Image (cartoon, rainbow, N blue to C red; front, side):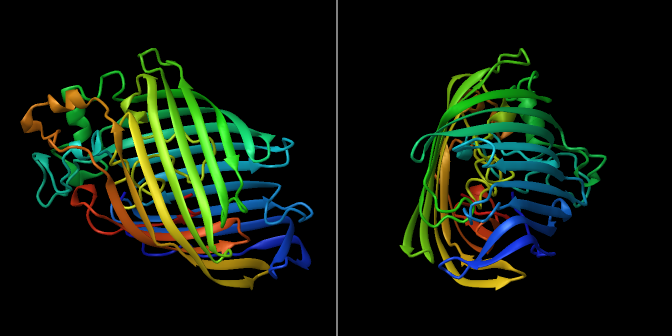
Length: 435
């Protein structure tokens, strides 16, 4: 998703009750007890309007003996845009409930009245951000790549140590997705236009029984390996997840499926904990069954790091290309970045750090989705470009403000290296490293 952010989220206040006046061997304050970090969210999106809301991390560090690791963390976020999109989220990460394990939950509701839809199979879908079909009003902007989507997401995952850093993990996830054409009464600048979503319905690339969305229930199981020194701000170690996800056909329309997801992250210290080379390799593929179009972009990870778990594109996978611009039955991606923590300081009884992270991202469809049908659509519909799929590449730079190795404020900017993946500079203001 292309965004122009005008204002960075700023610190409102931080509160620590109580605080132990000891320090680590690096001079950091050892955190104990409760730590509250609320932040106002202020931004601007050229399509969605001004964004405002609040984000709050609630930590409990116990007696501080395991600092910077926490006993548990609860996160709350409520934010909205002036033109209608909203996020309501609560998640928790508990390391003190399961011996040698953890429990994670996520409850989120998204509303997106201008949700991006760019078609199937990456470069196989033509991209023209100014393309207008129909009888638009004068001076209209293109509605071609917009649709309306709402989604409720609920997930619970558990992890338990097998030996050393190796764990088994299991979870259950439920998604209810509702999709429809963009509301021309709400966005009257798009009156008289046809959208790509509607054209896909007309040609059968989106089936009648999936056009309005539906329900997905996933049972997940797999293995994880985690040797990171910190969860949110790692400078060394591995974090690997291999997951099987089975989705029974609960709607009775033939969309049960089995899939496999592998996400491997490695953090290589170059200069102590000051300079780290970090990379992530991702692979997701359908093994059997059928996936409804509205779930082809979901990345089936067991433990969420970003609020959105969708790709490829946007702030959770390949930064700089159109959000959900690359979807298929099988996806592969890679993220490479250097993390230079150039300044550490203490403020309001907290440990802070500033870091730069130049990066390079790439991804592509490795197993197509309904490609033969896409090829057979009439040429006048402009739904197939004739181009072969290849890597979608981007490059960019980020700036991070890190508190206690656990809360990360982030601003990133990236540029797609192909004009078919998006125009202009993609920017994002949010929380946490990508991986």
